[in-house]
Image (cartoon, rainbow, N blue to C red; front, side, top):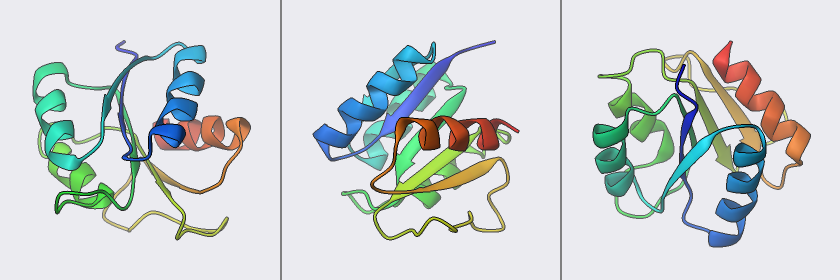
Length: 119
């Protein structure tokens, strides 16, 4: 099973924290700062997990990015992170195998969200 995680976050400080947690959890990580770059990476690598900010630069948000990726990878687990979420946020109904995570978050909360998304 692939342990490749696609991390999409335009804030370098948050991306570094998430990348560190994912790497420590055994994932190989590819990073992108926007949706277009993430789509290009995913076309080349077929990730096993995506962790994405909800609000991204460049015209595609995190939820739409996941929807687009799932056209080719229908069960791709996804974690949507955002400062706009509260602790009780749930993913949109059309995004199964997904979890939401409010910023700021702790390492344990990120790992729990990943486990939830992976089912």
